[in-house]
Image: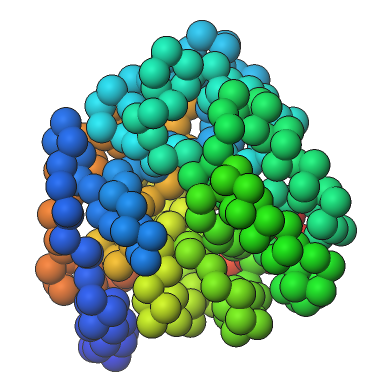
Amino acid sequence: MRLNRREFLRISALATAVTSLGGAPAAVEQRNGMPYRMLGKTREPVSLLCLGGAHIGLKSLTDEESIAIQRAAIDAGVNFLDNAAIYNGGRSEELMGRALRDGYRDQVFLMTKTFTAERDAEGARKQLEESLRRLQTDRIDLWQVHQIAEPHEPQWVYERGIPDVLLKAREEGKVRYIGFTGHGRPEYHLEMIARGFDWDTVQMPVNAVDHHWTSFQKAVLPEAMKRNLGIIGMKSLGGSPGQFVNRAKILTARECLHYAMNLPVSTVVSGIDSMEKLRENLETAKRFAPLSEEEVAAILAKAAPVAEGGDFEPYKRKTVA
């Protein structure tokens, strides 16, 4: 792609802005060649690659295939596992619970999430008990309020008793850390932070297209860094299926993941539904090296033509993604 001088200068300025955020945090250790970073103020070491929970519960996978993928990921150095009570009607949590038998539970940092449309305290409490049962564990390392996607939801979360449920769960030892997620609009994330709860983590889209349009990276990432929140990146390929790789065909999966990993995030969630994709993503994470400003600029330049309007980030324009 050839850029005119004006567009070249704009992309170069964007690349400088990206690198000025601080770039990729240094790995604190490696396990089986997998880099580990600190999860913000929790000081928990987590793998650079996080195994996404939605894909491991897809109907296209047999129970045995799903369990095998999860255990292979853990054996290869992945310790951060993502999930949510609503993924595949609870099947994702059930399969993860089965995969974590035989000593695997003690090898991982386990995260799941609560979501009800009403953002009600009773619903969150019920989901916590259901998640613990399905995951076959007595504790969840990170419990997150899932999918802040509408303008009223920050207010509802705070005013309908969710913070009390979160704190009570932590006091009871059922939850260790607390966070929230969303991919609707960055202003909702900012409100969740500004209302004052002491969050440990935040999960948000981080990708090359996001930087050009309705950007979580520009708006939320600096605020999260100020508070030393553990930053969990998602939607690195533009959602499921990977919009930038499979539909727009503008970037490779490796370019997408390396761009996300180059940001000041603790981990990047990736949906994996086959052993082949697992091998590819493991190799991508293990071979990650900080990108130069020129490399960042080249990726941003490829993403720029499809960025405006959100056609390739549909989750920013939908109620539920």
